[in-house]
Amino acid sequence: MSLDFDSARLYNPNLTSSHEEWRTQLRRFVDAEIMPYAEDWDEAGEIPIELWPKAAAVGLLGLGYPEQYGGTPGDVWLTQIATEELSRVGVGGVNASLMVHGIGLPPVINWGSEAMKERVAPPVLRGEAWISLGITEPGGGSDVANLQTTAVRDGDHFIVNGSKTYITGGMRANWVSTAVRTGGEGAAGVSMLLIPTDAEGFSRTALERKQGWWASDTATLYFDNVRVSVDQLIGEENQGFKVIMTNFNAERMAMAVGMEAYGRVCMEEAVSWARERKTFGKRLADHQVIRHKIAMMKQKINATQAYIRCCNESIERGDPDPADIALLKVQASEVMEFCAREALQIMGGIGYMRGSRSERLYREVRVNAIGGGSEEIMRDLASRQYGL
Image (cartoon, rainbow, N blue to C red; front, side, top):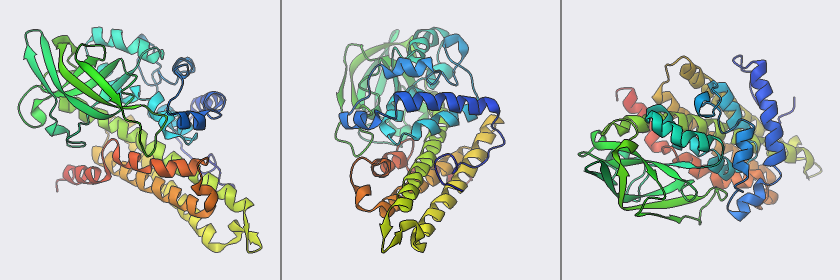
């Protein structure tokens, strides 16, 4: 049995021929339009604007969104396949930037007014406009309940002051689904506002000196007396924490699927190198210690795939468990880190040089382990869900 990306995928009885047809179609697109250029885009620090309409045309941007806004409804397995195929490229910044609407648009679709949905969703899903999510602040990351950006009511408007940072897609975004404080302290005073980036008083600066995700634009956003109409509330006033928490579950699932797939990428490179490289008169793969490293990668990948399947099945049943999703994200980040580290150990010097997917993914481990909720916050969230 070979251990390439596909053969390292466990059998999933939930997948039908339609799912596999989607994988085939999407893989053709990825292999033609992304894979040959992704490394250069990463080195350049951006992906070309032309990629978004192409991704829309193949059905990638609209997957999982209502038809009335230009989307294509689909189950969790279609979404999982999309994440896996993009992750196969091994350039996390491409996936993060191209699909950032996956965290910015759902609050609008699930909680926004009909007028808001009709104005924002179609151009985003056509790849003609961009939306990001503004949660993290300079003074705090995962502690969403204590955010400091304020939105004070002034007649039919809110006056927004504050800042957000580490915002993926923030330099390109036309709108930002933004968490603001409209009430008192704690979660009960949080609201979500859709803020257009052409509003007077809005500004942004790029964050370019990153460890990984070079191809993804990242920004700090500033709000200086930005006037936002009250009809731009996403959901009800002071009910934004519920919007944010619902959004987090989907983000964490997508990140977990991506991290497991990145682990498979690293194993694939390690296996290929171990078969070709010779030391002490025999292949690396003929050394027991190397075989054991690869076996441990496969073991951990298998366990994570099974956990992903369990969580996705609960989502399809309409009964997702936030604690399990949180712990899955932790497991997936640990597996990605283990596989990236072991791949580089097997590859030696060549793995340390830029140009391999494993080297890049090793640099990208931390952003995955932190983004969407750090490992520490995820464990604490799970323990609280279990009544501890």
